[in-house]
Image (cartoon, rainbow, N blue to C red; front, side, top):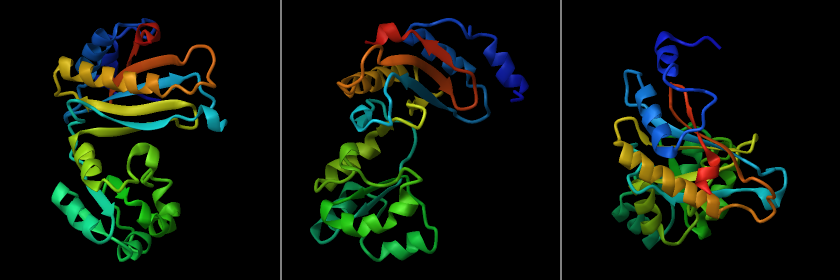
Length: 230
């Protein structure tokens, strides 16, 4: 893969073979964010899980103390008084069955997170084929299938992120923007690591966090010493 001049320049400051303390890795990732926009700082965690086994799956959500720096649009599927609750909590879109054709046929995806009350999952289930591949399907483990729509919307707007294993057993999540202070990023990073450590499946033997790196969207990553994160 051909890298641009800026990437190569930023990469010079990072020793690819070194394992850094979290604070140092965050500082390097911030300095490596040299794009012309406010890059997202991401964390990539390679775990010792084997996601092919149901008892080694990881999926959950955590509210980052300083948010993600991104404005998140929330769609809530509900009915009755729950529609008013969702609106009052600040949901961007609320509705029920009438939204199905808009998403299914018109390809409307002007939202980042979908929340649904349990009694609407029969309706939302019909969108599984389109929401599933985009990672938008509501899930009780992520707190997006709930009767407490107020809390769900408030948490998401405050900076709640979802974490889960991809096919390579790696978790990829944002912890803020390059414009955040190092302290804010460090707080968010530690909150995420604590949540992932707590979510460790009991079936996983040996080292759980195999490798952890912090990187800006367009720049090189700095590896964190995983031994320091247990």
